[in-house]
Length: 152
Image (cartoon, rainbow, N blue to C red; front, side, top):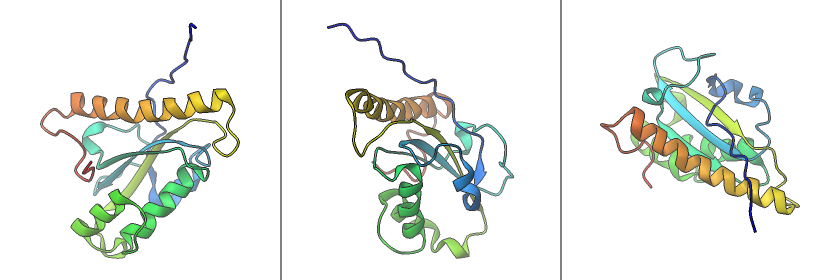
């Protein structure tokens, strides 16, 4: 059987502040995301890998918003997100940070609750895109193997 898959280009939204993350179009769907913790003003700019602190993905039914909530819980000292736990261990409680948390995303519109055959393919594409983002990061920032808060 021959398949033709349409893999989206690895193009993220512009950076949003953490407080404005719900403004990212289609973030109720699965997808991949990158975070930056920076003193620079990144709002409205296209992401550059040298600013990226974390890369993640989700295929969960609550989409990117649900995964970000788990991250938020972790950076406030509650469990729920491995990357958020790492950030909390290194930087402490979110309310004490001097730098700003930014997020950008590449949502993939699909239905993970009642997936069709095409939705399963799209969820596989989400996983592929995360690895593609890691590869792009490594090419752009060769002195690092991964963003500073990705431990796995």
